[in-house]
Length: 446
Image 1 (tube, rainbow, N blue to C red):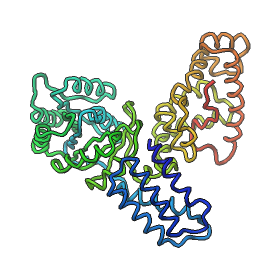
Image 2: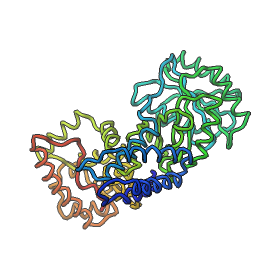
Image 3: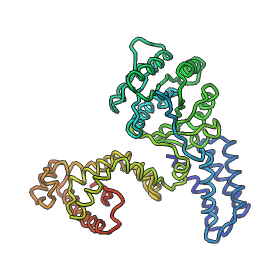
Image 4: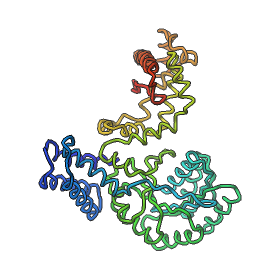
């Protein structure tokens, strides 16, 4: 995400590289390039100007320490201003109420229905809530069917009524059903349009008045840039929504919506979503997004994703096995499955400081990167997976045939595995041990 903006900002900072001190001239040149970068990212002109004026004022007012280079100081100033521009701190969703009612609004195609399901899964699996999805887009039968399918995937009930084409009554009935069924949260998926129109706005206003939602979230397709900001302003003028959700961050996102929307509507971005995977939803943290935009990675989010997938007790058991040199292909396969659950491999790699730029143009980093390894391991018998030392020549030949690979590829994997076991045992003998299970150094496909 924001690759183009990141590259442009990096070029802007190069103006100060090698400079001994900050001056009005080199600051003016740098700020000019930063403003161009923001405008190219489809940031509102007034916001871009206000942002760069603040950066310039900060830069010229700084006392540069001898140990800090001017370019480094400028990165710090831009980083802090980006955080401020995007809201300063994370603002959580309001879940008070019995049940808590969350109204989802936005244009058609912005990802409302998919996000409604993602939010339900997030609240259920990570916050222990018992949500109910309400299918209130009565104009698009496919939306109701889509919500039903997504609800089944995440095992969340979906409320719908055959023959009821009144979204206001549907919303009221959904809340009544939630109270009777013990659901503590109701997420109402509303209809969208290809553009803002009076009929749509009147309808969603009527829903708001009838159910008094505790939280109204406006869904923004982040690929639409400044258009998304303009639409958000129109919705906010009518609905006075509580927060914004940026979807499709895995697409060709220039960054205009993320950087402009808070300043225009004065409402926090609460969630971001990327991809079609039902668990691809993150809380929005301005400081972490600023890190990503400036190419600094996002190690905190990466660690949080890892913590969600790795069980502490299993980690202890695995550590004991590693210390005794008993780590097997079965253990390795389990680690691969846990890593894949964390999300897109390329996105995960980009969260590691210094790695994002290196993997940006690599197209072969995805879940398929593991498929050769998985195929080879799945072609082993359970006994062979747990006893790698038994893999003689004839067994390797059979495994290669069963996995659609070559004997050379099987040999390469087993050699890497042996080397890794030795390395992991040495690491485990250290009192500091390892940071997490699955910290396996040979995650490369054959």
